[in-house]
Length: 273
Image (cartoon, one colour):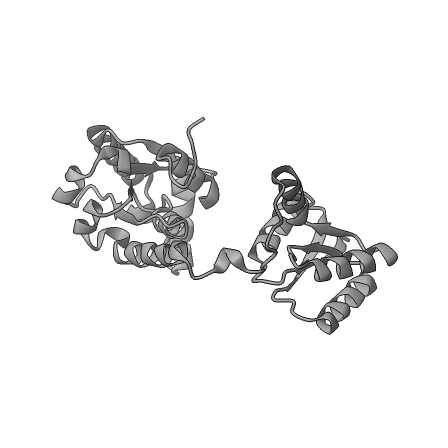
């Protein structure tokens, strides 16, 4: 039987950072049944006290991104006095940087979600990307920060939305041998285009599963090996003609592929190594 481990994720803001770090860390322990309980916007002492008591009762691990000194001290004192394991994600970094630079942090919660220019840029990028998904608006290629190309099931749309969340305006175009390439694509700087591809066996499996999910016969032209090969050959010729970089999405997560793209195009501080 798999051993259960409760993990309490605390924050005085939305808690997205703490959640991501917690999940990234505990995926390294697949032998455990990790049960996450999120406590965003922890606002008062009574709420925090109840959370800490429950953590002790359940033998939970606490992971937090609290920034106010009083709240941090409350957590530290309780956990140390009651043998509750806890991890403070942000404050070791904040403390070290404050010491090195000789400045005091403002310790204001929720700063990563302020309605600043970056936030509105992200909303704008998301709107642009939704409008220019799946080749719906070829003129958008000329205004995009990035154009993604690929045959069906190469993760164009999920990647586009993920990158839009990084303030990148993305347009994507499905490549189909029987369809004509929009004239606007040839006017885009190839350095702003990324071609996506995938392995034959992966595409074959994904497309067959897609047909089954729709309640259809998996043995269709869409999932036929000859057809997939034809599409892959066609897309490779387009990429060669454009002179754009190509990324294989096989066995890569959306996050990993996005990181490769941002590195390739030097987006958001990513630099080629």
